[in-house]
Image (tube, rainbow, N blue to C red; front, side, top):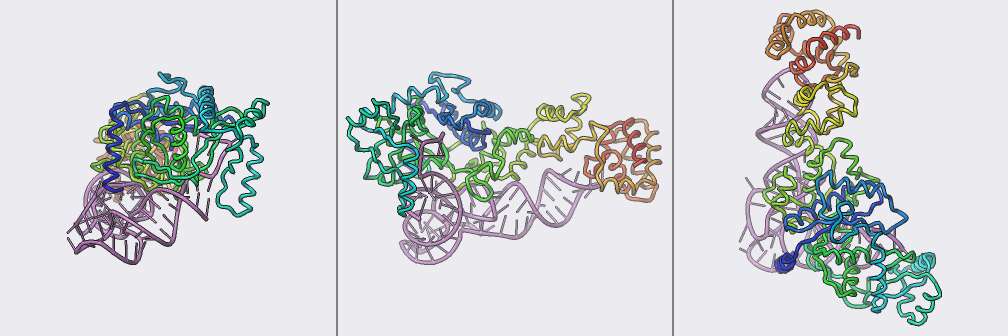
Length: 495
RNA sequence: GGCCCCAUCGACUAGCGGUUAGGUCACCGCUCUUUCACAGCGGCGGCAGGGGUUCGAGUCCCCUUGGGGUCACCA
């Protein structure tokens, strides 16, 4: 971007700041809460908060065929889970209620008809089948332009009125200019030019009386005082149409800011066909909201000081919309997991971590005896799990006696079969199982046997945990306690 | 295909005319060590290509190439 535009857009931005900043996300309740929604929510939320403005959530459910009420609830819940709580939303309400678009159809309809009266829009009487046929014909003719053929654009008003009065179904389309250019002033890209000749007389109001996204979004954004439309890049090409809707009403444009699109590892637009895009699913796997948010914050954005670990609060403090980079970032699980591990072992307090782990442990039907014991186990395993579910998977032997034994562990166990009874004897005689006691005892034992410590520890580890990848032996002995240790060694001799 | 956007290590990114092109993940070593991790240290690895502009381009312009988005009575 040139310096000129940089300055121009910054002053544009600053001019807007004299008003209250209002941002929004407008998810459509058609499926699982999407990480792309969380991503947009993050940027909209952070920017609004930084500017002392408001962040609104509005549900775009005007497509009745794809509508899913369950999805609606889960999207709102997801936002609460990640802590990006809207100032106004369907559940919170607010001065611009309702925040569910289907409850605003009357408003949209009125606005569509206003445009009709203004002569900025017109009735179109063809059926979807006719349109499909038109498209097919255009395709067959080898035409590049497959848009609407504007059959009714200049239809005589009397005719149109007559057919409408006769009860004939119709859609309402916007009369977009046939010539000239439309310039989208994108905060990140500068001016983006579109030839009006490339545009289409898109539908504003469907035959079923429901508005199409474009109309509903522009009307609602205007009515709700949205000042900055921060949305995914996939919307960039429909922005000229949005501008023409706004113009037809005589309304001011918001600041447009199109963020890069999250990608699958193959670089295509993030999709559930290729990736797990469900925030709920990450949550169920034991990904922490903080880690998810931190990771999303590095998608197309970075802290000015380049630190990798930062919270939403940190973002609010240092956020700069214009620092968003435009290459489409790949949403990759490796780094997400790393972030999660980092939060588990360095960011969350032990108490906090224990609270997060609890539901997972309970779901696994683990008997964790006490909070103290749970915390001790967590501490022992802390550097060894990256998701909460992984904790469950790697801690079975601390909570249940029916833990599985891996083949490798079994082999190790058999290697030590010769001295395990003797070792059991020794352990049984120890006054306590504190590391200060067990460590020298075990080391002396190994020495007496003339083997390295590992040769004793590994079979013991295998016997007590069924695994070869565990916390330190002395921690295990202490946590398990004498009774369980002796029991397990006894049982091991039968394996 | 038309239109639009984008382009620094495999991935996420810093860089906004003068840098030995920096950091993070992943990967590979080493150290620590009772295993596995963690941690620390080190390594591998990049400005897509070609033209300009300039004393000087990763940084500015153009072209090519590549990737993506969009062309619905979906959002």
